[in-house]
Amino acid sequence: MNLRCKQAAAAALLSFGAAGAMAAGYPDHPVTMIVPFPPGGVADTIARPLAQAMGDKMGQPIVIENKGGAGGAIGIGQAGRAKPDGYTILMSLSSISILPAADRLLERKPAYQLDQFVPIARITADPTVLVVRADASYKTLREFIDAAKNQSGKFSYGSSGIYGTMHVPMEMLQNSAGIKMMHVPFTGAGPAVQALVGGQVDALATGPSSVMQLIQAGRVRPLAHWGDGRLDSLPQVPSFKSQGYDISFVQWSGVFARTGTPPEVVDRLRKTVKEILDDPGVQSRIAGTGSPVQYLDAPAFDEYWKKDSVSLEQAVQKIGKVE
Image (tube, rainbow, N blue to C red; front, side, top):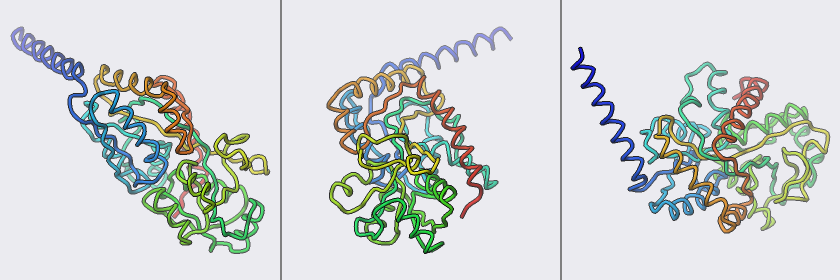
């Protein structure tokens, strides 16, 4: 028995030593950052300047892997099954908290659980914005809601998938305004935005970064946002609350690692993100997407994430089962 105990202790020490050596040399080859949406959406536009700056700081490329589908569940699930060594990290939106709650509501097995991830940092936090094509006849929120009522069930909106961050706020709007619209889900924000521009859908809710260039080019028109007060990036756009609709929704972006990743590796990732987001140049590049940096380090982000997850699960329960 004593011999077996000594052998087990020696094996544990060797394992610990190997893990420590791995962490000390991290990273010694490229790191994959999974973005669970196609190119062109909020997560993708924020991930690219962030990954570039992280790679420059860490001395190894951070390679973006777009893995869209199921409102983000496919890519998030893949990240949740990754080896916990820091070589696969995740850039996710707040939908990471919504999808397991929606799966439970629909009585199906979730693609992942929140405890499969450890937070590294929150990068941005923007209220979603309601946008329509610039050539639409309605120029105000009131006109939009009247048009939706007149075309009940035929007025359409696009999203990144059922219960995703583009779907939930529109369900909130329909419940609050007493309107019924047709939901058309896509594989991500990029395809949904293209469908709006191409005339396949009438409206959508999305983070400012995925439509800012189209707004500036005069191709889409913002009507309202799901935040409080005014947005720095769109100061002329009123909130729903200011127009009598008590609804709010924040689409945040954050970086996660797999639970079980060595603490030294998690710490390296945290320090790297903090250092690059302290750089005004990096801040400017991310803000240029339309979403200014709203940084939270891991402890504060973890607390924020837990509270937000409760709020989003309550929102899903209130929305109920939808098609």
